[in-house]
Image (cartoon, rainbow, N blue to C red; front, top):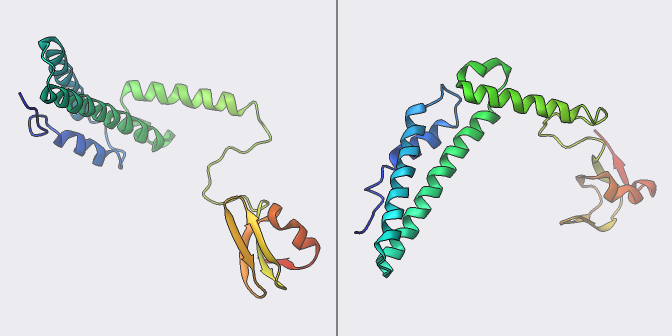
Length: 180
């Protein structure tokens, strides 16, 4: 028997992936449907194993079913993970009881871990630390600098945003000037 994607209901997996971008009430129906599909796929895989006939067709069917099962598991994991990332104290009511308890336990563990490092700020920002990166104007041609994976040619009169560590020697020589 050849199994196709049409035999397995893929629509709910796509709906769950679309839904994980917005934090809504926990969609128990879609998650249960994917879990039921994984059980069904397990049964089909076991049926192929016990059949004892090893052909190219059965090998392909088994590989396809195994891939589909892993895909369903990944969709469920992504759904839970995205819900966790979007959750804060103000919207805990959107989580089911298991998720809420897991979120609280993880937050407590995170706070306990962070308390061991009082001098380090663990706040998430999308901006680079200003002490490490500076905006400079090149006062004279200064050649080429290698900044980890980036090669930058410093040309007079141009503005650059670079790591301070990479250009410290040029700042001391007054070849570059920091400005805001």
